Amino acid sequence: MTSSISPASSDSGRRLLAIDALRGLVIVIMLLDHVRETFFLHQQVGDPMDVSATSPALFFSRLLTHLCAPAFVFLAGLSAWLYGAGNRGATAAFLAKRGVFLIALELLVVNFAWTFQFPPSVIYLQVIWVIGLSMLALAALLWLPRAALAAVGLVLVAGHNALDAVHFAAGHAMHLPWAVLHDRGWIELGDTLRMRTSYPLLPWIGVIALGYAAGPWFARQVPAPTRQRRLWTTGLAALAGFAVLRAINGYGQAQPWAAQDEALRTAMSFLNVTKYPPSLMFLLLTLGLSLCLLALIERAPSAAWTRLLSVFGAAPMFFYLLHLYVLKALYLAGESIWGLNQGKYFGVDSMGAVWLIAIVLAVALYWPVRGFGRLKAARRDIPWLKYL
Image (cartoon, rainbow, N blue to C red; front, top):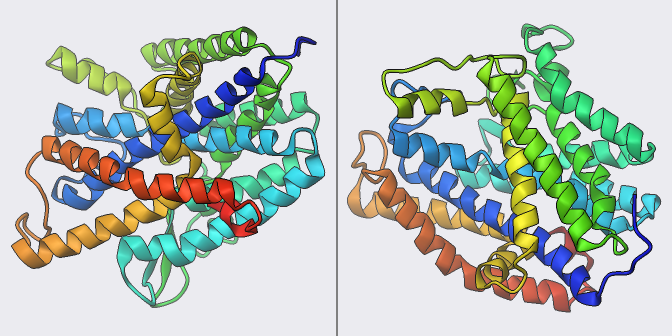
C-alpha cells in the first residue's frame, strides 16, 4: 500500500496545503449558499429542487453548493487519520471530545445565529451537528481493520437508500432514533420546542469512515504521483458510477430524471440529486468531484489561489461561526434601513446580487480569518483553539 521512498519535506507541506485549500474552497462556496438563504429567502428552494419552476441561475448555484458537506465530512475523516498518525487511542479521544464540542456548538451557538431566538422554539440539527455525531461514530469505528472500516463506509454510503421506504410515525419507539439516523423529520420535545433533523446521520458516518480509510494515501512515505493517481482513479470511478446509474435511472436516487422541453432543463433534471439524506447519486457526484479537485489542488501548491483558499481552510470553524453572525447582522441592518422589500422578507432581486454579496464577504472575512489562523498556529499551548 505504501512505498519505502521518503518524500521531500516540501511534499509533506503540499499534502497539508491541498487539504486546507480544498476545505477553504468548499467553505467559501458554503458562504454563497448561506448568502442565498439570507438574502434570497423569498425564492427559497425546496429539496429536491423543482426543475420545472427553478431558474437555471438559482439551480446551478444551489447545485454547486452541494459539494460542501460531503467534502467537509470526508476531509474530517482524512484529517482525523493525519492527526493520529497511527495512534488510534489519541485519535479516538480527540474525535470524542471534538464531536461533543461540535454538538454543543450546534445547539447553543449555531442555531441561535439562524433563529436569533432564546429560548428557541425550533432547533435545527444541521451540518455541525452531524459532523459531531459522525466523529463520535468514527471514534468507535476506527478500531476496525482498515479494510473493514472502508467496507462499513461503502455499505453505508451505497446501501442506505435501501432504507428509504422505512418510516416510523410520531409516538413510535423508533421515531426519534430513526429521525436522527435516516428519516429527515421533526422531533417534538413539548408544546414549545421541537427539533428538525436536517442532516440524517447514517450516510454521513459512511463518508467520514471513507475519509479516514483514505488517510494512508497521505502518509509521508507515499509519493505524490502515487497519491494523485489514487485520487484521480477513485474520483473518476465515482463520477462514472454516477453517470451510468443516473442515466438508467437505477438505484440510488428516488426521483428519476426525465427529458424536458429544453436541453438545459434536461441537464438540470439529470443533475437534480437529493441531499437530505444524501442519496448515493448525490455522494458519487460530490465525492467524485472532491477527490479530483484534491488531486488538482495538490499539483498547484505555489499558486496564489491555493494559498488564499488554504487561509480559510486552516480556520474553518472560526470562519463558519463568524460568517453566520455577520450575515445575521447584515440582514437585520438591511431590514431596519430598507424594510421588508420582498414580501415578508428583506432581500435582493437576483442570483447575480447573491454572488456579488458572497464575493465581497469572502474578501472582507479573509483578514480576520487569516489573523485567527495565525493565532491558532502560534498558540498551540491553548488547547481549545485546535477545536476551531
